[in-house]
Length: 360
Image 1 (cartoon, rainbow, N blue to C red):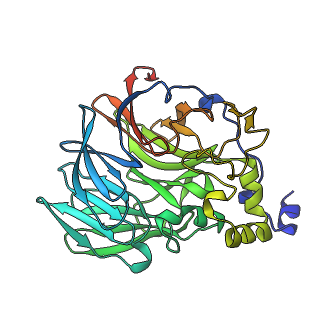
Image 2: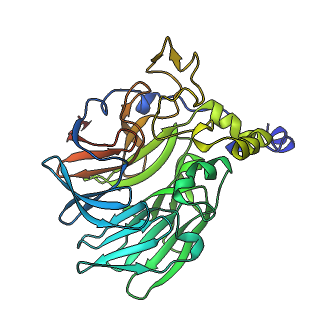
């Protein structure tokens, strides 16, 4: 089989099989039945800051008030694509086309990054008050062009180590296929969710170390990671993998023509929400029957959050199925004894309690 794969110039990334939503990932309706905290179009980038929960929406950064409202605290010239908070309250924000900005003493300052790293900052994690690790999803495409990066089989992502006091930065890892989440592990390694390769890898603290695959072949595209109070982690998965998408990624001629001649919203591939537009792909029998979306339909969007243990092994999951509305979750955090998830598809912030047996 290995000889045949080489002969056909196919590797493991060209496999057409997609893991079933089963076992730990068995579908449920926990996200659809979750409490709605507030509505905010395009809500994303949840972080637990020193004085409360913060999130992004479009070009703005907001403080979440538990009385079902969000207070604007900053507005930038472009969409906010990344946020991270230090224990003391220092806030880091990535802006598409605007690079990295740091909140210190009530004032924002820009942190200079290379031009090819400034438009697709996807995640961040503070090592301490002075060192910030930043994920660059792509050095070729901006954050809003994530579909183009996927369909171009992009693998130009990188992890940067930034020292805020001196302005120095270095590349810790590169050649990554859209790193979308970062988390520091108890052993000092950095966990990275690599979306286009459907996996979570661990990087050593020293630059240049070979990555170790912690979780492989996830059934959806992984996004951001956040620590849990029990030592584990929360993983948001923003869209489902589908066999047709995997097939399109192997057909270069079709894929290139699709990119060149069809608007991105109508490409065969994942999305944060189902617009219901009759022109989008997969609107026939297997997805909608007699005009009704079936829970098991192979939709382009889905809602999924996974609970991981200390070793990054999935142990539980929360779902909004194909016929649900709370799709496109790229960020989830634990705060104040509850799990919060930002659904970009529905523009809502969700809250679930955390019991001894997992999310409730």
